[in-house]
Image 1 (cartoon, one colour):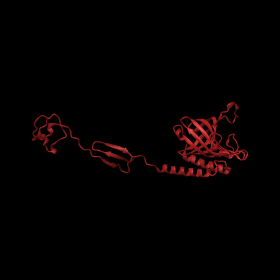
Image 2 (image 1 turned 30 degrees about the vertical axis):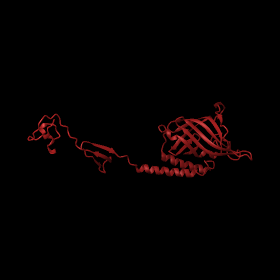
Image 3 (image 1 turned 45 degrees about the horizontal axis):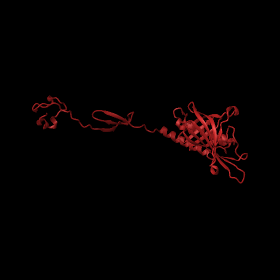
Image 4 (image 1 turned 135 degrees about the vertical axis):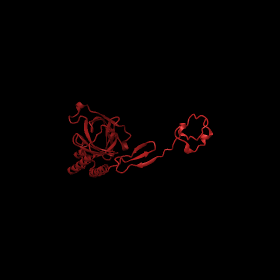
Amino acid sequence: MVSLSLLLLPPTLLSHSSSPSSFPANCAIHGNIHSVTKPVLPVSLKLHRLPANHANRSAVVRSALDEVAVLDPPPFSENDKGKTELIASLKLKLLSIVSGLNRGLAASEADLQKADDAAKELEAAGGLVDLSNDIDKLQGRWKLIYSSAFSTRTLGGSRPGPPTGRLLPITLGQVFQRIDVLSTDFDNIVELELGAPWPLPPVEVIATLAHKFELIGSAKVKITFEKTTVKTTGNLSQLPPLEIPRIPDALRPPDNRGSGEFEVTYVDADTRITRGDRGELRIFVIS
């Protein structure tokens, strides 16, 4: 045990060393010293920044024993800010052009060209699309706001389909694409209003064209048709859905094999642009 005389020594006479030689010669120590614990010194922390001309401007924590660098998050560059503002402006321009075209049904040749030019500007600003490692960008329910193919005045667009207008009393409602990247389900959902002889009211139906999809390359999508389901809404919503199976390929016309391809040329959190294998331009917004 350490004698009382050691405990009464002034703090200035205490050394960090446990060796008896570190004490003054005139300090008598009685008894045996088995061990002396090295005192723990308080560590002062100092937060400061490196000079402004330093390559990595970071907060640095310094102590008496060590120093650890803590990096700040990278600043938002002016180039990124400028690109974001440019894309927002081009999106607004494109949506303004197609907003009054009734999804393309009312588009003239001049309207088609304006929409195509505005879409190309946005595609160029967004850069190449790569979905190979980011397929989740397709996930969701997308609302079709424009299709250049609808200018043909048929519901099939550039593919065979029933005409709109006076020949058949069919009114096109909203059109959606529902994409599930986990199950690879790809459904085209079309709201239709079918005219009926007076005095019967028109019949409202929702046709769901079910497909499976696969990614080809980095941005091209192939869809394969499976079946069509027609469900009445409104006053006839209690009727069960009618399922129309896929027509065998042998009975299909050569230009309609039940599959198609399109390329995603622009996509972000709320807007998607695609160009089909027959040249049709389609613009979607998230629903």
